[in-house]
Image (cartoon, rainbow, N blue to C red; front, side, top):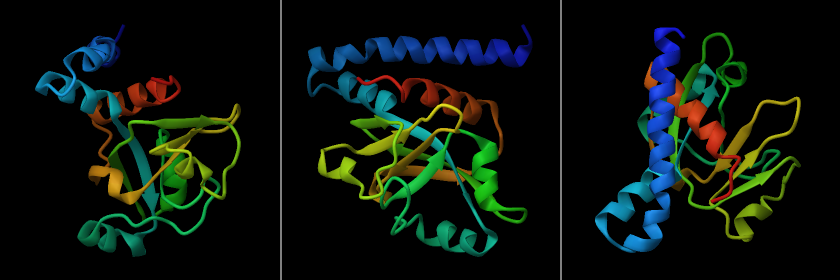
Length: 169
């Protein structure tokens, strides 16, 4: 195993341990420990690619919901750098976006109307065999974003979120 693989494995096992502790939030209730675990489990990480002409506006004003898309209105992100870079183009930027999503709708079909919002979901995770995963979420759910650097911690969070987004809690 390479050093990078060992680091991924260590981070992955740490996150699995935290996820396993997520059941404590039901026991702890409104306690501080429960809130901390809840935040770790329900904060997602995706990559958002955008053309150069949008970068300054995003950096100054943050993200804005798209008015349409295959999963309805919202901010879109992917777990794949290649997919995000495809939207960014040659001169664009890929951002690493973290957002809050307690209740995730998992689907393999399009939902252009955004009915997932009406059904009480905070975000939607689209995963269709043969395609790269994608997520859509409201702009107000974003907790932070930064330019994607390909760091070990960013990549590990993306891989872990991709894995756990498929599992309903």
